Length: 431
Ligand SMILES: [Zn+2]
Image (cartoon, rainbow, N blue to C red; front, side, top):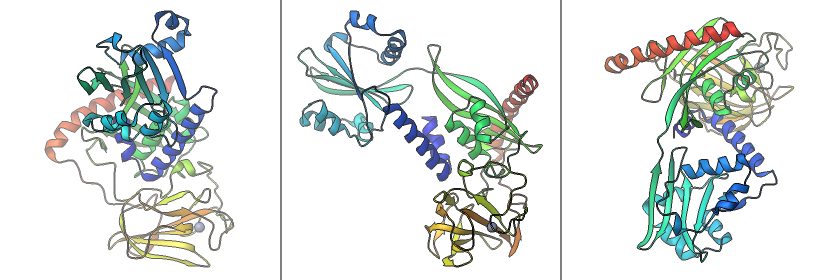
């Protein structure tokens, strides 16, 4: 499940944002008049009455499932998992016996049924006497778990459909915001977030994106019988920010590397707040919320809603977690003998003095405590005790891949980037 893996790799803030998005989508999916329980019959005459779109959807669902014995069940019922649902609640709604639930829970392959997600679809099969005949649960675009009531007892198996990967390109040019450019380019919410996550150590997506910036992305799409069934990983991406070119290629280890084989993941994120929370994505004449000056003082201010997650830009130890009337709630982190970062005006602090924190770990929420006129995070970056601009400060480079890995990575990276650049230029010329 590449999407899930990608999701886990995303910084926590991104994951929260995606979860919020998905929750929103689930809500949207549940809002229409469509009921959570949809019953359907396999009788051919009823199949013909279904609308072409619905029929195609049914066919798609059914294609996943090799029917070994179609006659064993007379009726199917599709149940959409609601928020808060468990398998036992669904069984109770369908008036299926608790003993059956218990027997299913003993099946080794049935473990995914213990962690249902809202929006998941379960297909129940019933025999002509309305007894339980089986259950289908798609694990991802390619795999379906089947539980069947066979004459010799309950059985479980996982069916795999072979998927074909196709490469696809997308290009976006920033006009109003990075997010909008991603949407216009046809990228999904998850892809936009992972594109930002990929370059989060090089680029401050909250404050440094400008009109005219553009990006080109090469990603995989999964097809089954000529129909798109899923979106896979971004294989390579290029981001041109204020004229500077950043490139990343996915290695077989699932991580992203620069063309010369250095990990995109570095010791410091460029921004401790996810761009998706920043109200105005760029403003060349951003005024400081208190002083009204164009150039903020010794730190950078991120204006966003109170409650926005603030993450540690790098791993380290919390040296201060306290409150005073100027800083409000504040957290200081020492990363090593050279680097210290400071986070001011927090609404809530989520770490204690002396605590170890990991990069991207949430340390608090953005707020308006202390001497401020509006909610924002004041972020400071100190090198050997001297304030530096975290966007421009030279930071230690990530190590390169070991020689043997590099020998595998580089030829492929060169090939993908050449493709990306070629297609990117053609697309750019068209726009
Ligand atoms: Zn400030």
